[in-house]
Image 1 (cartoon, rainbow, N blue to C red):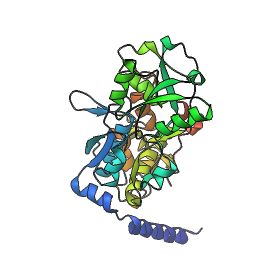
Image 2 (cartoon, one colour; image 1 turned 45 degrees about the vertical axis):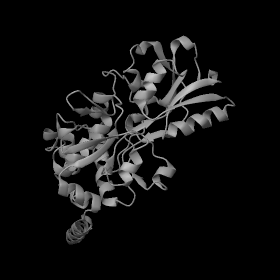
Image 3 (cartoon, rainbow, N blue to C red; image 1 turned 135 degrees about the vertical axis):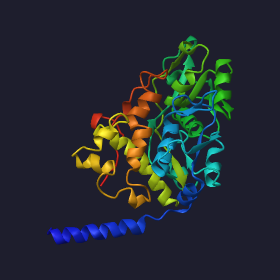
Length: 340
């Protein structure tokens, strides 16, 4: 392409970006009030969403809320949190009580269509499992015929549990609770033989147990549980902001850009890094964001790997390996769409 043609193409692209950078109703409302209202796990799920006695929230899902705030306002602290049970979470989003649901929620067909949600990506690939007391002597979920099972209501966990036992011609007695804390207390008190939820939730909940070493997670993974942030259906502009916030964290890890070296990386000659950090191109403008939105995310919150290791990794009480949540370049499933 000749230089004049390149200039014309660039001008056309800039015009298109300017034309499409309008904000939808949620994005506009968020900017007007000056903070993101983020729905999170209210039961306390260490590693994903928990609050200390000083009111400070932390976790992988919390980091995503903070990253969205950094992208929109340049301030990762411009967030207010709404603690929600599994039963409350979808109504809170549908009603407009929250702007963003970042609460270990599985992306399913029904939720993505009939419930009026739009998932903006997957920030944790998980699968449902089972935990039992070591004293039970059980080595496999296939030995659980006739067991009583503690399960949280209003979750895909209930449906997966029923499907698994039915498929394997086994019976069970469900012991149902509305909150995770109630479930944990009942399980430790011996009101049920088995505790089932996503495996990440099992490891997280076990950190709260009085004697965590007395319990074992069985090897079977009985479902696909892609967990991710959700917005209201049709809220495309706001979904773009959330989606590309997550992708910015993933892309940064792949390119080796961290919270510690991001300032130095702004001087990189690598065009991929320069586009990500807003030194070149107009990616931010196409979403109604500042062009350095990804820089703000990485500087204030970190890349995806930093968030994972800080909240869930081998140096935390959960000691969860990256596994499926490693980058695609290392055999995992995490993959950012191209920043072009």
